[in-house]
Image (tube, rainbow, N blue to C red; front, side, top):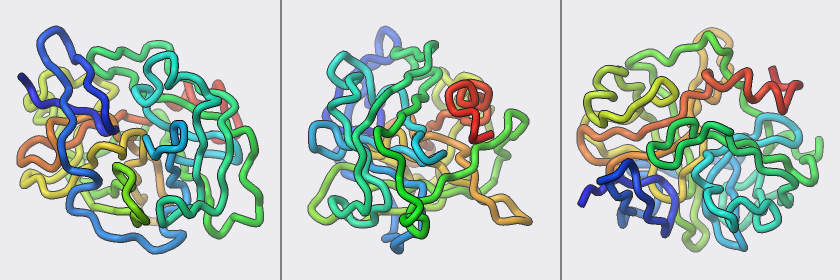
Amino acid sequence: MSNFHIHFPYIILTVLARSVLMISLISRIVGGSNTEEGEWPWQVSLHFVGTAYCGASVISKEWLVSAAHCFQGSKLADPRAWRAHLGMQMQGRAKFVSAVRRIVVHEFYNSRNYDYDIALLQLSTPWPDTMGHLIQPICLPPSSHRARRGDRCWITGWGQKQEAAVLQKAEVEIIDQTLCHSTYGIITARMFCAGLSSGKRDGCKGDSGGPLSCQRNGDGKWFLTGVVSWGYGCGRPNFPGVYTRVSNFAPWIHKYVPSVL
């Protein structure tokens, strides 16, 4: 039985006909370190019926980007069951919490191979301007943007909920697309890999939907290059994490959130 898994807790799902996604025992970002308050102001923790379940990224005053697989099934697709925790360093100590008004899962999302693994969430209450020092949107990459092999970016998340867990960060490298495809075999144009060949740094269960943030040389702007999607184990050598390629979805996001592009 294969040990593929997606990065959120307590779920076992099939990928293609013969593979089963199994959850690893590692509880949060592998090889990460503690963050400072306000260091990643677009990071969101999504709570499902009171439990930290997935991550997301702030892209505007009332819209978040996450992964489609976080909302698979009738219960998970119900926005009333979710709360978005913003401006938070310590799990459970958010500066702002909002109910979710709407969940938009990409219409082409494929639950067998995690293609088009992206979703938008609309907050019931926009975050206030007074929180601007702790909550800020991350820029969306244009359609023309291409993550390049060797680019260094950051993954962030709390992973599976723990008592007073501090937001974790870990630096990873964009992996060559050909190598990514040869490693997994089911990589589409809307996916890419990032990690280290040694393993050691990776997202894990509970980090799904969270950001892969890349800083542009020159002006220092941060872009949401990827969304944590799936992988084989957590932090295993030669098995990097797989991310949704956000630049492919710029027109789709713009359709729902015209103000961000």
